[in-house]
Image (tube, rainbow over all chains, first blue to last red; front, side):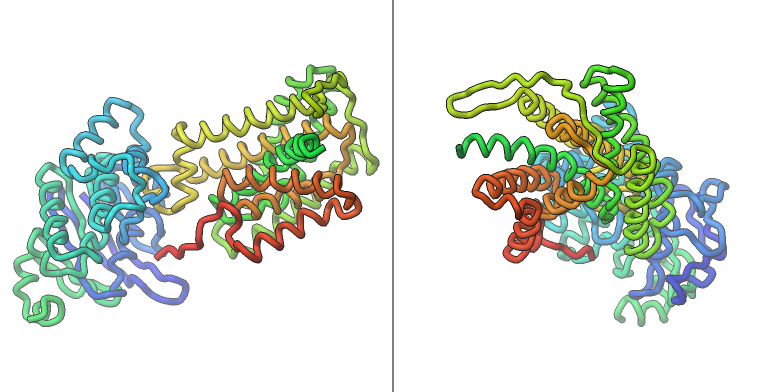
Length: 234
Length: 290
């Protein structure tokens, strides 16, 4: 479904990605794990069109999307849950969701999508007319996920969804990700919390200073002694 | 006396507010002070004059024509002078804006000549007396039009799809594009709205003072910029409040006998407000995005 080939990206003179390749198959959850500064977020920003790679290809359903602007990438069916949630804090919960469906023309369809998000996140329904900036961190993360789902993406990119959340909420967010996947959305998940990410993913890639150093099924990665030592704290 | 000056101040202030809205909306989205905005206002006034004298149009149709012409010019200025500099340093488009401003002033001086041009009296000089207050028909029309435009703007921003996109983009440009919003289109639309309001302001000021000038945009633009900063740059209600506040203060200052300091009042006020409230009257506290 998504095939990244030899992706290079640098911020000025600082190399962030030095030729990474990986792929995401339809229906899977793929985890991209690694420490701070390994290039995980940069990878997602390149896929979503906010950054454009210096070289390399990002093929989505066989077509290179590496030069598309973000709104075209959304149109193609890829949606990003950005790092740090980035909800529109001066807009209401409902308005945030409507923004997520910006490309959808049918009011009925938008309404159905909103209902679906509210079914999944009942707390958002209670707070539908509240400004997003007044929500708690966990609620904002749910809103960010709900908002990304409003465009009915085929591929959902999640950037550090567990960041800054209480352990119980982290559990909840990951089980939600699993549910979303089971209802037919492919997920590319970027996480520092390797343990949780590997527990729901099928495949995983380990990123270190801009290069992929390890890849395999989530189980293989989780049992790799190096990974255990570096990321799982054993 | 007080009420009379208040009405006069609000009339002047509402034209400042119309111009200030353009500054604040553009700043809200691309963090650019569009120094050419005063010139759009000036061109609006000239188009208005041409429409009512050469083409003998009704003043309201002339207003509409001026707004349309200025939308085209405002959007083109953004395309030609600012868009290519979008990813460069913040200073580059600012300097480009100053360049456009000088270019448009000189161009209009070349076309219309350096002297003031009379704006024909298109509204009869009927006066209305309400108690001790005397209001001219022009003032009534300006107040009604300006309020209608500002209410219209609020409705666009609150309820229209593109208006919501504007709010989203002004809050978080990148995340807005992740929603599928074509931010270039939103920026063009913002320039269009701002230019239309400035053009309306230009025609109204022409009607009010019966005289326009190729350099009229300099002082009016600077004052409206003060109004926008005074109200809190980026804030739409702030620009409206700032404009009205400035108009009332200016007229009040003149009435109290400080006519010679007329233009200094705006800048003094700006300095005072910024000393005590650096983000402006309705500005939000500065937040850093993480």
